[in-house]
Amino acid sequence: MVMRKKMQRLLDEIESEYRFTRGMTGKAMLGPELRQAISNTPRDKFVPLASIDSAFDNHPLSIGYGQTISQPYIVAIMTDLLELKADDVVLEIGTGSGYQAAILSQLCRQVYTIEYVAELADQARARFERLGYDNIVTMSGNGFDGLPEHAPYDGIIVTAAATHIPGPLIEQLKAGGRMIIPVGRQYSHQELKLVIKNQQGDIEVKDILSVVFVPFQGERNE
Ligand code: SAH
Image 1: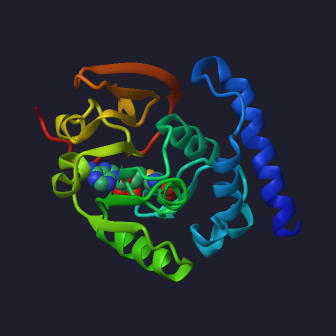
Image 2: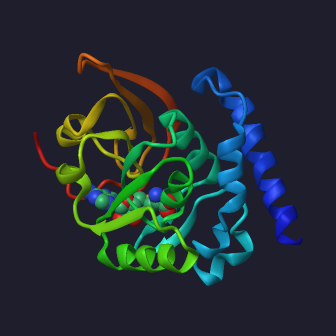
Image 3: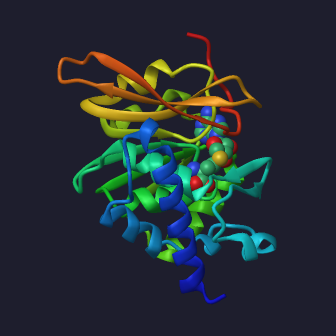
């Protein structure tokens, strides 16, 4: 199949899952900007060579170091729930392949992304440079602490399963900002949670979907 056809099939599969989950997510279909961002992002350049034939399947794939590139539908719905505006600044915890950050970078002004595995951070940084994503800053470290020097953030996205919502990330969310994070037991199902901070700084947490993510490393007790 030529790539355009594979991409079309992927978009169709994402849309069909959108329809299936609309009761839980409140999202019935891909908006034009998110659709465009997915179409423009070559997922085959974010997966290992051995998985290249599956790069446009709506599945997570292994990227080494025990980590995965998320399922495209999950990337889409998590991005969508952040409701980004063009001028927004976003913090991502769990760079992995960089695919999620690449999608985000097309829908906001600046993305900061933190990856625990130094080798993956280096690979993602090189990949962003090669592919021309110039509004993503990649760091290696423990994302539990967030990145206070650039806070507050309009959006925060966590792509590893945490057992609780890290306090520093709640603090670094702007009033009016949104955070999306899988919370629950590790090596099991988690609940994808949407955290909304209102203008008074109060927090509202909504359960969206049952999901499966790789574990959040280096969680601290609070
Ligand atoms: N967003 C990624 C998905 C990566 S899987 C993508 O689009 O490919 C989750 C990633 O989170 C893994 O690479 C893992 O190493 C990383 N991770 C786990 N705990 C972390 C932490 N405390 N800080 C930063 N990254 C973390």
